[in-house]
Image (cartoon, rainbow, N blue to C red; front, side):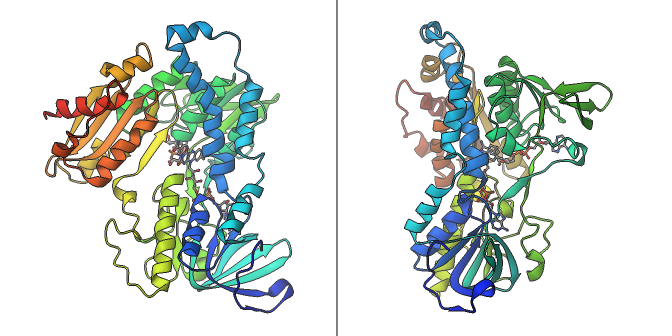
Length: 483
Ligand SMILES: Cc1cc2nc3c(=O)[nH]c(=O)nc-3n(C[C@H](O)[C@H](O)[C@H](O)COP(=O)(O)OP(=O)(O)OC[C@H]3O[C@@H](n4cnc5c(N)ncnc54)[C@H](O)[C@@H]3O)c2cc1C
Ligand SMILES: NC(=O)c1ccc[n+]([C@@H]2O[C@H](COP(=O)([O-])OP(=O)(O)OC[C@H]3O[C@@H](n4cnc5c(N)ncnc54)[C@H](O)[C@@H]3O)[C@@H](O)[C@H]2O)c1
């Protein structure tokens, strides 16, 4: 361990038992934050990590993928301004983009995160951890098997892994890991899937010079978001040269002459130097010992709003592994609530799971923000119109073309984008918002505050947006609603 738990130890050598307050299995963003909050709450914590401290997000997901996309976004915005466009000449420096991407992953070295954990007072134990009974975790380390016993809680934070359908079993496809860490663009890339990973990484590699084909089983992209979001992203991908084919299923896959050949249902083939399978993720629940405590490892680990497993007084799960929201910021949010809940219970406090309490991850169900970093960007929070209706809310959607807002028209000639508010008519509050267009990511937090705060429309009217910013879309939306 990189630090002492200060806890009594028994045994020695390869079978030593370490007792501590909290054991966290998985040192991704969620696990790190759960351990950190427990320590801040006055407890000792051991964080067990089998690969790189920092998890998927730091090395193979959020950070490298956004670094791969950023230059394409900037070029697209510059091309929308005649003056800046005139200054654009020559080619994108692909090697520089890849080097910057690599710098964000610290060249896949976690020394910086280990030193953060040390500073935060968290003990890091490297190895594969498994639950091995109540409050007990067994860790396979390079030095032998270690057993950890938790006085207060064990937190499962093992994340998720890419789902690769059996069709691709023999072709060693790229998953998001290879697609975020590749050392050079493949000449051609076929991407399978129509979700966030597929859209972002198709655009990233097209922007870096690959010829990209996107095969989508459904009739549209980004099915969980408002329909107009998928339509605008589809148009954006096609404008960037991605060959997007909708309603296409892959029936077979083989490698031939150094290429991947995909056979399509109904006939036809697609060939490319590489294939990226982006067909979703599953919680990492297998091989973590859930069976030893009577939990089915084939499903996400169910938790209550304090992130504790129902029926248990010691087992918690945060981040992707509980399937609530597969997003870094939501995993970290859950982890803060979880670490605080563990510390509070250790002090003998009774938690009722009250909505919006500091120890309840209430926003998971009501106000999850997310950004798709494509061109155009999609920024959304809360419920879509369809979700709100399916929950039985009496809602009304208000739409406005972002290009008609002065701030947006200044940002780009021919700015195209759409904004939607979903208003709960009974409470006259915003329960969902979606913005699609260039530069909308930074607009999102205003909507998150409105949704979480349940700010009445009449009061929102007094939140005056500055002129000429894109935020003026708030005023236009409220006017369109009838205020
Ligand atoms: C390509 C891509 C891009 C993404 N972009 C974004 C984005 O822009 N914004 C965003 O919010 N989200 C994004 N996500 C989602 C985000 O990466 C995840 O939601 C986030 O990483 C989940 O954090 P976590 O801590 O739950 O799990 P992980 O990050 O998966 O970390 C889990 C950790 O647990 C370790 N582990 C697992 N099992 C064991 C075990 N038995 N013993 C010891 N250690 C173990 C793993 O090695 C890993 O380090 C993206 C995902 C992908 C695939
Ligand atoms: N910018 C971000 O915040 C960001 C970026 C990437 C990923 N993420 C997170 O990661 C999660 C996973 O993303 P994802 O895109 O991998 O999954 P997803 O579930 O969002 O999308 C999977 C896509 O694959 C399709 N699909 C599923 N099985 C298929 C099959 N057998 N053949 C063909 N198509 C199939 C689905 O119809 C869907 O379009 C997201 O839900 C999101 O929470 C976030």
